[in-house]
Length: 189
Image (cartoon, rainbow, N blue to C red; front, top):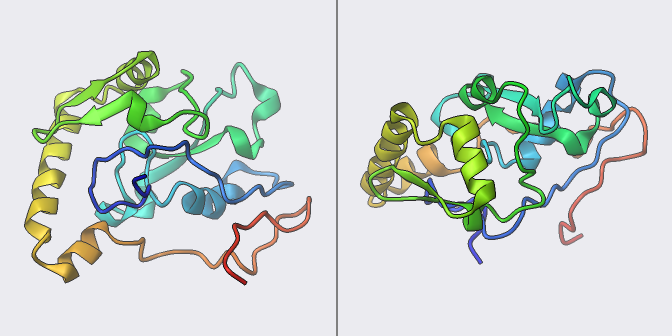
């Protein structure tokens, strides 16, 4: 099984996204940002663009099921997704499959030339909704694949471009307003 934090920039995970947290009780969507960043491994699940390539400021919180049709899910953590701002703006008020429920590797594949192909109906919806097959996304993927190939012989560059986010929040002391502490994965303690 491939790790979701694989250093290969455009390899989709074999397993659905396993959310590590379940914070409750916040009064604004933005209050969930740090939890979502960690759950989504500091990258957009659909475009696979990473914070380390741009900045945290380039990412937005969106609703899988739009607020306009599901106002009851406005502050539901399970309905929130961490998206690259271009993907969020392109998505608009349309629905996307939940990356916590599908295996993205069964839906999408990126070719070495940066082209993306959908493998099933869910993949087709993702590509079409986010326009991931457009020239800008394709060129960006091609460039980052090239950067990855060049960085393979330079561990410092590899860590900088494809390693962990440099601005990770300390969630161990953060407590959501209600529902007790957020759930944590087994950390070997």
